[in-house]
Length: 102
Image (cartoon, rainbow, N blue to C red; front, side, top):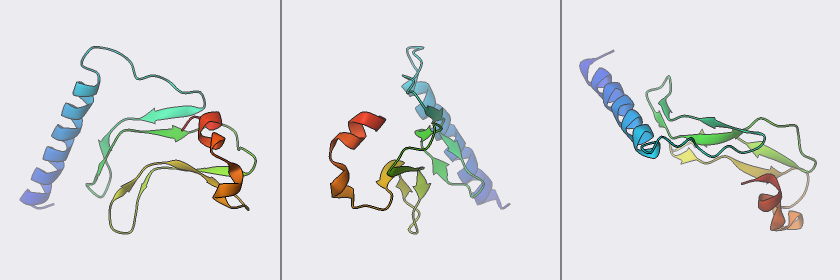
C-alpha cells in the first residue's frame, strides 16, 4: 500500500470517527428499529467510506424484499430500501414504507 493510499484510509477512518462522535455527542443511543440492525460508519476493504445505515434482519415479507445499502456502478452509496417482488411498485401503495419502517 502506497503512502497516499495509507493517508487516504487514515483520513477516511478519522472522518468516520468524527462523524460518529458528532452523532452521539450527547451520549444518546441511536433509536432502535424492530427487525433492523444499525451498521456503524466504516471503511470497507476497498478503502471506501460506508456511511452508517440500517440493515433489515427480520423475516421475509410477502411481496417485497429488502435491498441493503450498497455502492452503485459509479461508486455512489445507495441507501437500503424495500422493493416489490413480482409486481409493480405502484401496486403496493404508499403505505408500504409506513408499515415496514423505512
